[in-house]
Structure formats: C-alpha cells, structure tokens
Length: 391
Image (cartoon, rainbow, N blue to C red):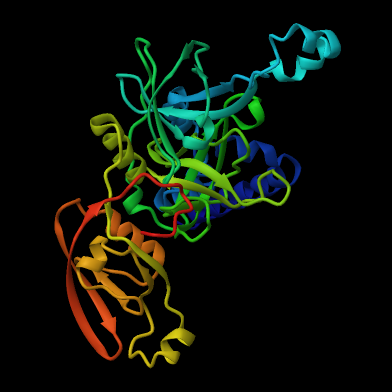
C-alpha cells in the first residue's frame, strides 16, 4: 500500500512539473488544445451582444430596402413656360432698328425643376401646384430613364397640390402610408431631385406635426422634418422606414436658399383627399360660411370680459352669407364647428372646409358671457386666391 501511494505521488509530482515547464516555455501548446473549450464561447457571446441588443431595440443600420421600394415611383419634373411674345415681333421696322438679337432673351422659355410621385398604375402623379403652375409643357422623367409628357388633371392652390397623368406601361407605384399614426421622432426619408443633380435620398426624423400659420398655404397642417430638402425636392416623397408615402415635400425654411434642417411636407391624407376630388369632380369641394376670423388672444379676451381664453374671434361677417343668415355676428368667438373644437384660425378653416355644402352645421360660439349654438347652412367654398381672408 505504501509503495502504491509512493508511485502515485511521484507521478503527480512529475506531471505537475512537466505542466509547469510546458506552461512556462511553450504556452502555445496548451492554447492549441483548447480551441473548442470555454474561451471561444465567451468571445462569441461578447461579439454577439451588440447585435442582439440592436435587434431587441428595433435598431436599423440601413434604410436601403425602404429606398429601393420607394425611389422607382419618384420622378423628376421639368415644367416649361413659353416666353411672352412681343407685340412688335412681326414688325419689320422693329426688327430693322432692334434686330433679331435684341429679342433673343424673350425667345428663351422659362424652365422649372421639381419632383413628383406616381401613386397609381393608371399613371396619376402627385406633385406641388407651384412646381407646374403656369406651365405650357410638363415633362416627366422616371428613374429608369423613360421620359413622357404629362397632362394636368387638376390643381388646388389652397393646399399647393397638383395631380398629373402620364401614359406609360408597367409603372412603378408607391404605397400609401398612414400620416395619422406619425409621431415626433419617427424616422423619415425625403426623395426627390434637388438642384437637378438627379434622384437623391436624405434621412431625418419627424421634428413636429400639425405646423400651421406659416403663410405658405391657406390650409396648413404640415409635417416638419429635418431630412434635407432643397430646391427641386418640391413635389417629391416623404416616406417612412418601410418606404410608404407619408407626405409630399413642399417647402423649406431657409435664409440662404439651401436646407437648414427645417422642411415641410403636406400629409398624404390631405394630398389623397385633394387628388380624389380632382379626379372625380375636377375640383376640390369644401365648405364655406363667409366670416373673417382671427385668433383670440388673452388680451382681447380680457378686453371683452370673456369667460374663455381659447377660440376664434369673428371680426367680420359677409353680408347675406351663410354665417350671417345663421345669426353669427362680429365679436362672436367660435369654439366649436359641428363636433370639432377649434382654438385657432387654422383649425376653424379646416373644420369648415370639411363640411359638405348645403348641409346644416351647428356652430358653438361665445357671445359675451353667454355660450350659444347657431345652425348654419354651409355653402361651397368659392375659388379664391390662397391669401383670401373671408372664410
């Protein structure tokens, strides 16, 4: 027994000594034998952790799929306007004294660049009214290099929306998204043809929603974004991270003419309503009651001893108009149209415009210290310039 224990202890001592020598002089021998051991698993877990974290939080490292889905349907638009012809152009004495060269500048057509979005297989396009306004010829170029002339289906200057139509086969079409579910901070892409350099995709987030009172359009409910929008982007697409259409890029806030990170887009819900009206009826049908409104300020409310601090002050009522016939008076404060509360002029315009002509609507007003409800028969909004003040 003692001999066996002696042999065992010697063997252990020799093994430990050999292991010590190998670990000291040839440590690589030990690592080679451990390639499938614990160490590789630890490294694998560390390397995989960021990817797992990203997947759990919904992080996205590329928006190429969204861009590939949306860009084929975003087109470049060239709108040209023939120069005004001089009344003396055919007068030989005029040409004798001033020559053909003196008329050269008048012979150059005016050109404008913008963007548009194909929204139906039938060839309907959405763009901005200011992109094609006054144009005699409109040419559309698709990303696949096909070019075709476009026909104007209709325009709505009060929202700055225009609908065009082209005749081509196998058109790429963008999918409509939901602007109503947008939240500040959502990722968006702006697609268009800035400065005529070619189709460009920029990214950003939704900076604000419901921007109004900017003096751009009569009806304003803009999506604000910091995605770079520059001249030439007008009429292009604002899309979500899946490539669905959220809005039509319309304007930028800029002191230099370039992007300063504040761009505005018309929500797709508004653009779609306008498009359907223009295609179906040739015009956009909106309600109208004939009042001149202004925002109610705390100072005005205090001056008139009003018990409310929010609403729209009526400063003028069109004689024999719908509001006048319904009993609305200057000095009244409108607080509700039908079932829609209104706290500023923009909301009043939108709420009234949503009413159907010839229907009766209940208008909630504050007259002095009395709250009242007046019934007004809505009329159809006349075609007016965007700066009209009687609503």
